[in-house]
Image 1 (cartoon, helix red, strand yellow):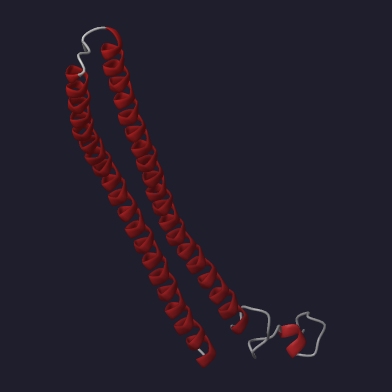
Image 2 (cartoon, rainbow, N blue to C red; image 1 turned 30 degrees about the horizontal axis):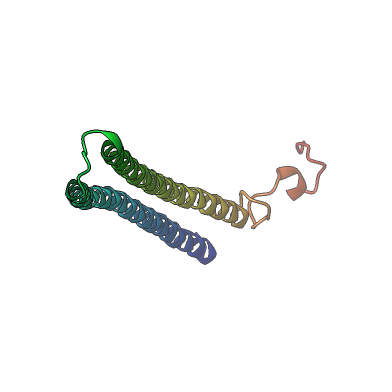
Length: 173
């Protein structure tokens, strides 16, 4: 084995290891990003639950205030305009809760999609590193073959008998 061949093999091994390490690192980064996105999705859910609970608390307080005001003014809240106000407020409250839940669900879905995409990117980075490894090994193999006697050049190996004896390639009689 020549020095050039040894250097080629050594450089190839180092390059393959570096490519593998880079691929693994990029995959870990992508997986970490996916985990963070999933955690953010959980936070969106918790925030929505908190917002709805807070809204319910404020709504109950405002309902109590309205009922007291209506009762003071002598309005019957079980029928007529008092009942319509109570019903309208309940419908609006329900709509606000549904909007909050819908927005949270959209946010969670977006974060989960971001997480899935990040994991796919990580898998792609790992596969790309593997493809680079294959390419590097193939190039090194081609280079080694061109350096050897099996490749293109004549490095002083045996020649055909016919040309060595000066004949036309036939047997001497």
